[in-house]
Structure formats: structure tokens, C-alpha cells
Image (cartoon, each protein chain N blue to C red):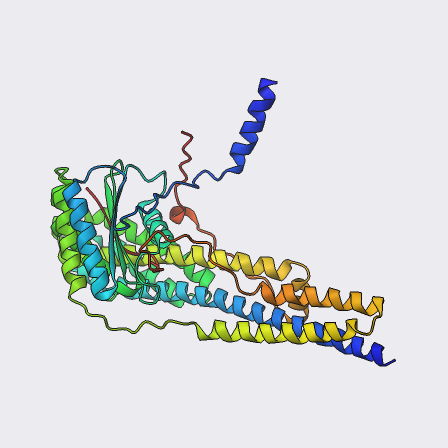
Length: 246
Length: 185
């Protein structure tokens, strides 16, 4: 009996993807998740305040994350996945920046949103790490290192103004759904007209067709199930940035 | 008679409309797949463009390691001359090996190791490698969605008639593969 229960538990545990919860989640503050618990309250407050004002100023976002370990992933994969899960930066401009520290692996990665690659090429992010971060991290001075690297990027990003216009509505999608609606209405009208003929065979055909085509058109638009925790703007990274060991 | 005609017209109209919508969604998905391929190509091109800079930076200081430097140049021209994306990716794997061999030798040259230009190039090259890996996994994702659609009933009937074939995957090879570390805790 016990072995049966064990087997059932084992079976269900196999159904759960191993890395399902491997990537850390957003926090309420969004701009900091110190899951390795190495940053002081002041540093966290400093980052949240500065990042919030930067976001108000030009829409770009700097996020700092520390993790105990990378769950067997490479820091590059971890950073890109986290970046795109959290959707750091604006959806249109992709102007997010992620600073990720992995404590056990002693690795640091700067992950750049694809819209910032012009201002922050990989070589520059590497140089910033060498100059402002690594000397501190080698002595385990987490607060000092992250603050000084953060400031370097903050100065760069706060020097750019809001250049691009944000385009609000997706016109193509709107058009498409209107066309779908019109087709559905036309089919509905035909269906009603046939039904009025009082022929059971025809009316059942009509119903069949109508529901079928409704499903075909209706399923074309899918809803995003992403639950956004406050500030995430929908930004993406395509894997740009640089990695350092310390 | 009249009723029969109406039904026939409706059937034809519905077949036509669902055929058009299937065709359109297949076209859209195929275009997504193609755009992901071109993203891989863009990053491969970017990577091959960085190599001459790297070679020029180290060449002067590594006169005794000519064969190692030359093997990087050769691997680069193989990448430039490759035609299909699959061939390019294969050439890129060989280029990565050649670059890594070079880096090993550079360890003996403190002047190069500390050279700002060299460090920056190393970051750029590693960055493009990472972008290629990301673009490839994104491609595989949309390719899988597209292939599933092409093979699934009833889309497969339209796909067959309209000439939509399934596309190949770009699997990671050798050194580029992610280390798999399963943690049971």
C-alpha cells in the first residue's frame, strides 16, 4: 500500500518540470530582488528610488538581482530568461538593463535589452564591470560594487532623453477583429434566415457551420496570460551583454 | 432546389473562408520562422565581422603563434563562405573552437590579456555567440509551433495543397550545448 502511494507520488513528481521555479520572481519593488540576501536596506532603497525616477524620466529600467545559485544553468541563459520573464524595459523600445549576481558561482552578468545595445555595446558593459564592479566583488564588498556599477549605468541611461514615440494601439489587430466580427454577423444572419424556413435538417446544418467558423476565427487572437507585477513594461533581451567571474 | 443551391453556396463560402484564414495564418507563421532565421544570420555575420579586428589585435604581439592565429582566420573564411544557415552554424562551431584555442595561448601573453581593445573584442565576440544561441533557441521554438501546425489535422490538408513543408531544427552541437545539471533537492 505504502509503495503504491510512493509510486503515485513519484509518478506525479515526474510530471512537474524540474526547472519550473528555477528563475527567481519579481518582487513588489520590481527593481531589486536580493534573493541571495547580500545587499543592505540602504542599497536596495537607493536602487529602487533611482530606478523609479529613471523610469519616469525616459522609460528605461535598471533591475538588480542577486541569486544564491543558478540552478545548473549558465548565467547567460539565466539572465536572458529572467529578463524576458520579467519583461524589463518598454515593450516598444526594449530599453531594460539587468545586473545579475550569482553568489555560489561567483559570476556577474550585465544583460542589455535589445534597444540599448547601441548605447551599451557588450565591450562597454564588460569594461564597466572591470572598472567599477570586479575590484569590489573580489573583496566581497557587494554593496559598494553593485552601487558603483549601478551608478555608471545610471549616468549613461539618464543622459538620454525620451526620443522615440510610443505607439499605443495595434491597428492591424483591431482591423482583423472587426473583419472577424462582420463575418460572424453575416453568418449569423444567414443562419437565422435558414432557420426561419422551419426545416430541421437545414437548421441543424446551419448551426453546425456557424459554430465551426466562429471557433476558427475566434481562436486567431490569443490572450497573454502574463501577470505583471507592477512595473514590468514588456521589454525583451536577445542575449546581449557581458559576463565576468570574480 | 433553391434551398439546395443556398446550402451549396454557404458550404463553398465557408470552405473558402476557412481556407483563406488557414493560408494566412500559415503564411504569418512561416514568416516568423524566416525572420528568426535571418536573426541568426545577422548575428553570424556580426560575429564574422569581428574576427579580423581580433586577429589584427593579437597578430603583432603573437609572432610565434602564427598557426593558431591563421586557424582563426581560416575558420572565419569558412563561415563567410558557407551558404545555408545550417552550414554557417556548423562553421561557427569550428570558429568558436579556433577562438578558444587562441584564448588559451593568449594566457601566456600578459600584454594582450590586459589590452583594453582585446578585452572589449572578447566581450563582443562572446556577446554575439550568446545572441546566436538565443536566436537559435527562439528559432527552434517557432519552428516547432509551425511544424506542429503543418502536420496537424485539418491544417495539414491545406498545408499540403498550398505547399507548406515542415522546416528543420537547428540543434546545438558539441561545445555549445548547455551543461545539464539536474538538482534533486
